[in-house]
Image (cartoon, rainbow, N blue to C red; front, side, top):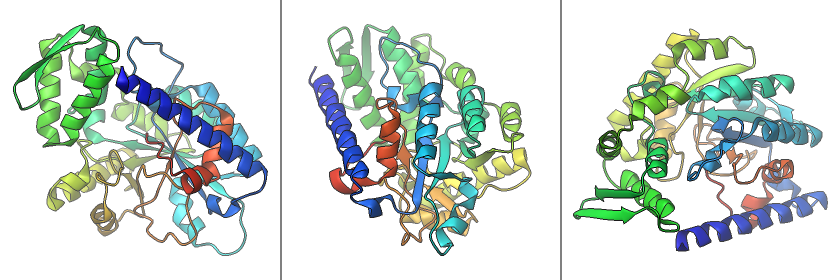
Length: 351
C-alpha cells in the first residue's frame, strides 16, 4: 500500500513539474536549457494492453501518442535527424534549428509493427538498439518474466539470500513491492546468477521465460526487414543486457564488441552507436564511455535525463529523454525537450 501511495505522489509531482515547464517555455524563459537538441528513448510502441499488474507500463506508449509527440515537436521547430548524424551536428557552427533523434531499446517487434509506420509518416529517422541474446533467444527479459509471473500468482516463495520468504500477492500493493524487491535483488548481486534464479522460479510455475522473448522481440530476419527501410538503423545493446559498469572491464568490452559484430552481420556495417543497458549512472560509467570509443563507437547513450549541450564533447556518454508511458501527453514531450524539467526540477524520468 505504501509503495502504491509513493508511486502516485511521485507521478503527480512529475506531472505538475512538466505542466510548470510548459508554462515557463511558453513565457520564453530558460531557453538555454534546451541546448542543441535532444535524443528521445522509447521501448514498446503498441496499442494499450490492459493488465491486472503492469509494473513495466512506463516502458510502453501508444502509436497515437508517438504520432502526437512527433507532431508537437515538429510544430516546435525540431529537425528530426538520424542518430548517426549527431556528432557532426554537435560540431557544426552557426545557428541551427534544434534537433531531435529517436531511439528504441531492446528490439521489440512492435517497433516494426507499430513504431515504424509512425516514424515513416513523419519522415523521422530512428535507431533500434539490439541485444543479441534477446534476438537469438539465448537470454530472458527478467522484468517481463517477473511481471507475468506476479500477475498470474496469488502466493510466492523465494529465498533472496537470508532464508525462504513467503508473499501473499493478494494484499494491496504487494505485487509492486515484491517486484521492487526482485529488482533490487537483480541489481545488487551477480546479475547472471540472479536472472538465472528468476528464470528458474518462473519455470517452476509453468512459465517459460524464453517464450516471452520469442513473443515480443524481433529475430534476425525481422531485424533485416526493419533496416530495409531507409529511416531505420540498428545499434548495439550488448549480448546479455547486463549492467556493464558492474562487470569486469574485459567482460564489459567483450559484451560491447560482440554486440557490434552481431549488428554488422545483419546490416553489413558496424554500428556507430551503442546504448548501455539500464543506462543509469551505476550501470554506465566513464569507463564504458572510454571502452566504447576504443571499440570504434562514435556514440554511446545512457538513460540519464538531459538535453544535448553545446559544450558536451563526450559523445559516448550522452543523455536521453524518455517518452514515458505514464505521461502520454504531447505537451509533455515538448516540456522534456525544453530541458526545463531537468534544470529546474531535477526530475529523473527513467525508462
